[in-house]
Image 1 (cartoon, rainbow, N blue to C red):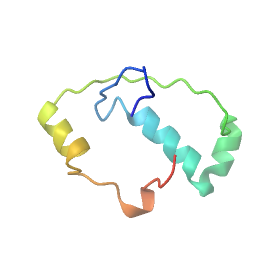
Image 2: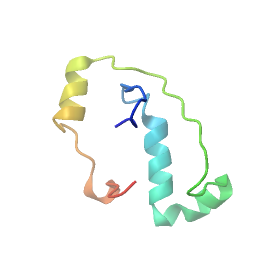
Image 3: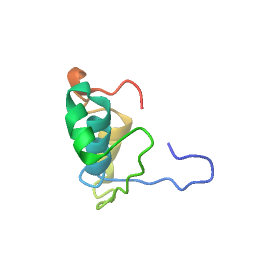
Image 4: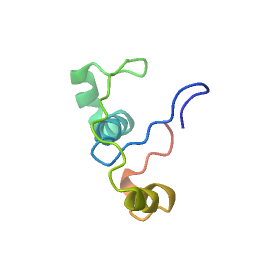
Length: 80
């Protein structure tokens, strides 16, 4: 969800992969060495590129709104 006044961005699966990878790296305790190596901290500023929009509106709705392909329990992020 965008912050007040920011535009809403619709991203396809491969467009959002950079955000998913960053979130995964920042949330998983076993990846602390990778975070250190990349110099990532809680106040780091990271530029993410969204390379794909919503190319299949029907599939997008099933996945995003209806949860067709849920994230496996071991990979769910409980807090951002």
